[in-house]
Image (cartoon, rainbow, N blue to C red; front, side, top):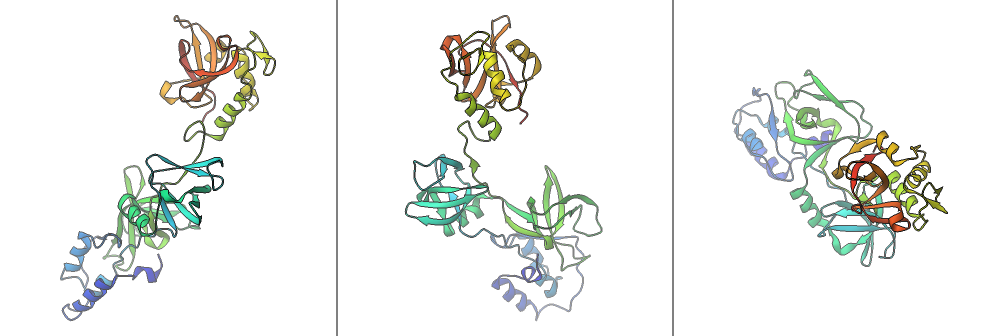
Length: 359
């Protein structure tokens, strides 16, 4: 944090500090390990008030205390919807979806043209209905009220020390790289016995673990959530899994042939799975029972598109395999459907669920 920012204090505090000048004795040291202040946005915390009301504290020490100024990106907007807001490739509902904003997700408004706004949210860029965005002061107030404060290690910083105490002589607990975001526990800590002009930030660097970083190397900001990439197979589904499912769908309608191996002329259940996975570089056994012996069993609730569902008789004999595509649907080659088709996952007796792709 630069020196000018360190002394950025709101007018009321400057006036109060100046009025103290006629009252307090010359500077002297106050013995205290740390003094913690509150956010400049939310006002002065109780700890900061206690610090200022301590009559043993000098004017110089009061003026050295930082009020953290939490930054909010310019042109910020917040999705204000009941469910999700589509981010499209162009300004119109006929354009494809490229991303999804959940209610409360943030984006940066690039431009507005009529009822459409061009936005960037994380790595997603596209168009949304402008009327479903909170903007300006309304968006900023939402962020202040709903989003957690955090710091971002300045870009270009390598191995910023996270210490056990607000002291350069304390133990190094961990290190943080430039661009890293860390939740704030206390935004303004001053070790008056070591250096009353140096400000530290207490952060959570791992779950349940806290430490201190120098404010000189961080930016105060908020933890914002951004858009996720749109996937017809559900949120968080990898590109590989999406491509696998899309490729399989090309062959819907190919007839079922027991022992068949041709995706265009005829194929059976395990042949279909084998051919689809082979297209993406995976070698699988030819028979469903052998497939079931090879791969990792998973729980039903952990199923992702691209995982396998095995079927069979009530005594556990496996005689069919299908590929899961989400929403309790599968794609498979089945004599029941006269070939490759999409159907309910529950069309037959399920034996187990297994995973080939490790993501």
